[in-house]
Image 1 (cartoon, rainbow, N blue to C red):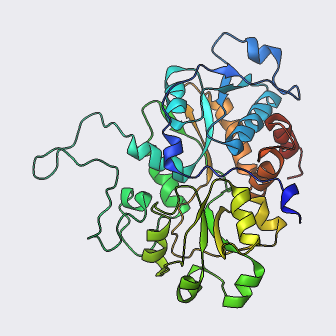
Image 2 (image 1 turned 90 degrees about the horizontal axis):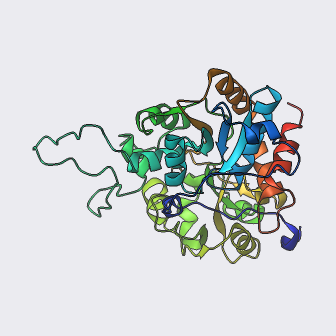
Length: 352
């Protein structure tokens, strides 16, 4: 397939992008396909469910998907833009400008844990102030800062946390007044991918099989990823893999083009990137769970009604990883094929 016609999403994978300052005023999103009704937009009785667009294109489409299903079930709902950082979104949930937001478990947990504000600070055993929850790199530690999420969860074995580990831990770290709804089976966890030719050349099946060949591979990564816990240090600690190089790319499109042209021999991509299917790429299994789980989930304020929560949970139960790939294909990239509203309508109308 010609790389110029592929529809790809821009990767937004670093925690730095999740800590943007500021707090924008909520503004209803135009429903280009008529999904938002005048009643929901004009409602002033506090009963309208206000769904924040979240941190990226997938959460934006999911916001419209939940809005459409809520409307179909007779619950007034509208999509609002309160900013694209988790700090802005949490502020909006707490002050009433938003009622709920779609997100993903791993990044959400790390954000919530790093921004925890316990009601009563817990002294350390020595009586000195408790250490910050944010991990600090240490060259003396045998595993170093290889997975902040695993460290937060107290997992010190040879594997990282599972999907269920992260989901079960979320309620304990979410800010006051914010509830966790049912998680979905849909996930977009990062994966190392190779071309079919490279996979066959080195007999690669999972990341354990990469170790002996790792020095021959350049592994492309999104900007800022190589120095992260899941980058070079994580590959070394979990799989004894020290790549020949780890060049970084500003967009998923550039990264995939480099992989297809053999500029790099492997790349780190979200598991829902359409290029994996479109270009016949091989996603290597991650048996030791280096890459933190990212399962679709919704958090909401305490004002979210039980009826609305039931509809939201039903939508989440229907959502699949393939839906996330479709969302990226339709609404991602610099020239999206559909608006978020239309992409949500398309996903909603698919047989289940």
